[in-house]
Image (cartoon, rainbow, N blue to C red; front, side, top):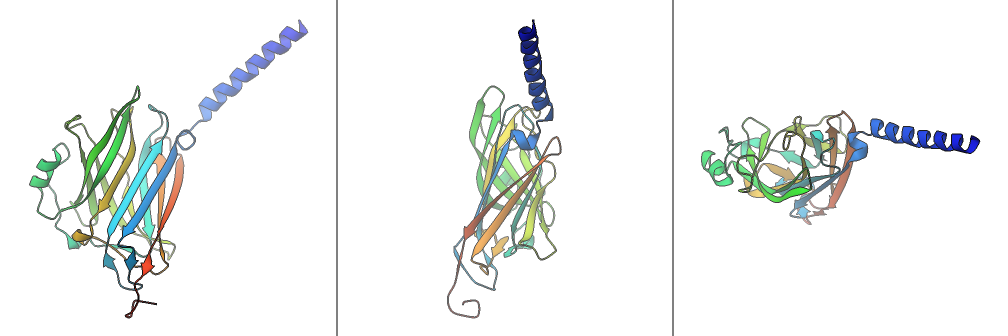
Length: 246
């Protein structure tokens, strides 16, 4: 009887620990957050800010359905700048339009970048390569990241963000704030990858190369309030000669 009693107690303890682990699991522990960022051209002035191609991609690995990202803060190096006045703004309602229709509804030049996104639905159903188009506006320092895929018609998410200037003299100077990340399939699905490159032709994204590197940091807040931080960096080269050189 003693051995049986110990066995019952061991099983009970194992079950209790398993339930406790499930109960205390949060979004940050269930998911792994990533971020990638880079600038082109690699050769930049040391002092003067020049238009750049600014690439940003966030990805999240975790169970679906699970505890999803609720908000995002993407911080960029202090040697980066944003100029929303450099391109026309679009205030048209584009959320449920195709990519071509969204561009047609907006002023020429307000589409300032492009990229791709992936989403996953319950049961392992994935849709990869959704078309992402970045639109300047509708307001100052605001941006809309419009997605579309003919397989999903108008059911694809649009991300609303604001570009903020960061004060305090730290490593990061500007940030993309997305306070309400879009839900997928009533929040049972997840955006697993989302990336876009802001084109230098738009003139909105600018940078210099003072420290020979460009930093990026992602802080994602999940539905339960837990947070994860991911970082990346890319190298840049200073242009030789002139006042902005060595």
